View (cartoon, rainbow, N blue to C red):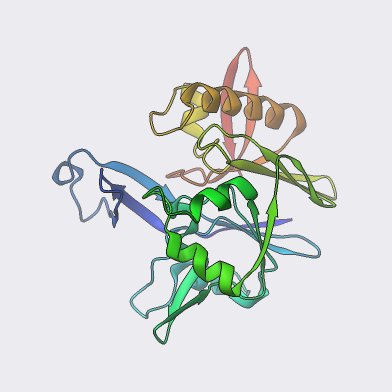
Length: 256
């Protein structure tokens, strides 16, 4: 399997839940008090029979009015139309904003030929618009024009691709496991968003169930270390793809 990191950049987000681009070479974090600073890295994975997108970023465009996500996909040697599967961990805006794109005054799916796979409970809550973390208008576009597959709980989506309900970061979050020809990839979404959360074993206030999320990170880290899984870190600043070592009750990450 081939992995491509589709880095969308760094952002600050405050209590209004607006994501504002943040370039440390230009901006001063002290001028954004109370903000959380995050990094956004969707992933493209090429399997034998599928081109997979893991989560879709914020949907920001470059100066040419092209999605940054599309630009990176083309740089990797593909077209957005080549994506066959969009596998979502959950639907918070920083993971789902890039699922749609505005073209000639109308929003359409960013990946028109892809099957979008989403946990059913996550979809049903997101489309209600009851939380500002979810943008209902995105889901209405997908409902109108995209191929949607809603899954429940944990299971095998197709040979070599399975999902597992986790429910730590948000109640209907799930994680993904890919296996092909002995290669193993784990995408934990916001259950394992960056190496530091595993290394420091801390509870994040923004998780729905902080203790459960922390315990899941440790569980996934131990599995990755024991079985040789490559982990994709969606919110990492530096190490976006890495393997895990676990020795003497201590985790370390080896960049790939």
